[in-house]
Length: 452
Image (cartoon, rainbow, N blue to C red; front, top):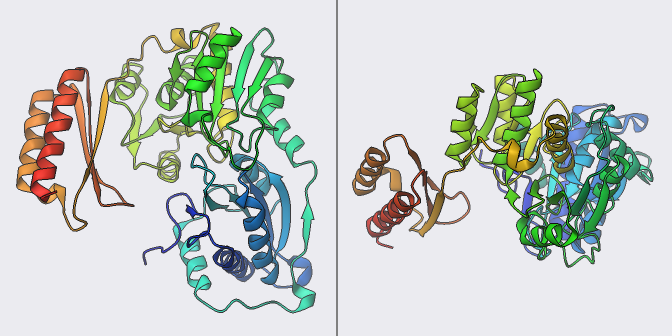
């Protein structure tokens, strides 16, 4: 059964358009509550509990009320924490022994968008079968439990403090950040009242930026999607490091003292290399189909096993668990350290990088000296929806010719978008000239073959 509303990262869209309308979000709350109630006891004193957090978008007020109403109507108790990073809600769901967690956020998207992410009682993304059950329940009537069985709501006033302490616990007790000047860009998002405190309480001198959310400025010209703001601030402040989060705090990028930007592939390499040297690396590292080939080759040189999952943190996590490994992530900065948290966490990932740098007494440039990222070119080609690029003989011939010329020094990826009629052509390799040539050549072959 194909899911109608749930994608790889919950339900997401433009506010005011389906599925991000008050009515559908209330239906989602009721459906989620119904599914949860069916999975457990039905007595009033055994009501399921769900925690709701959100980022700083103005639409969060409206959607929070709608989601709460639906859950309460289904007989579920609701715990409200206000603006809180996505990984904080995952942690609090486990810490408070609740049945599920919900985050109202559209991550790195502009403020006009929003979405709902749901976590299991273990702080992980919901399995497909549970999401399908919720979608099936959304198609039924929206009813209401008898008054005695309606859910209650309460606010968790110390949620921020609990999560700050949890983040600090991911950094060694015998180590601190004294002597470090760090610029922290919170993207006017959910980490604005969390991340600066974490790094400050570990001893760093913190220069916070992107910490004045208005409801309309999340991710606007700042954060991990606009790292140039952080780069300029680090140089201006003469800081040692810069850290940029996205709107809901599950991604991180970093900048060194020279203003150079380091993406998720590079940060994952720093963490894995440190753990290998310290004897704490368990298994290998999971990347995605988009992970830079240079990173894969660098892991090979260190004899660290490496595997590629489909694009999306859900698939990275699934492969990590299947392999029994602890590290994985994407170039976008969505890193997962399973020995520290059940999901991707920007703050905790940044702390793992800082731990590695402090232990080695190294800069980011020094820690990544043996990692060379290859040039990567991505071309999007609009095609008719029914066009199958992989089945086309001309496209196949172009791919074979390109692979022969690259001869192991590069990599090709041809995939159809899951959300729009677009074929994505990605080529990477040691030679930028070859990469550009073959990306353009293959894209043109797809364009002609599709009649686009």
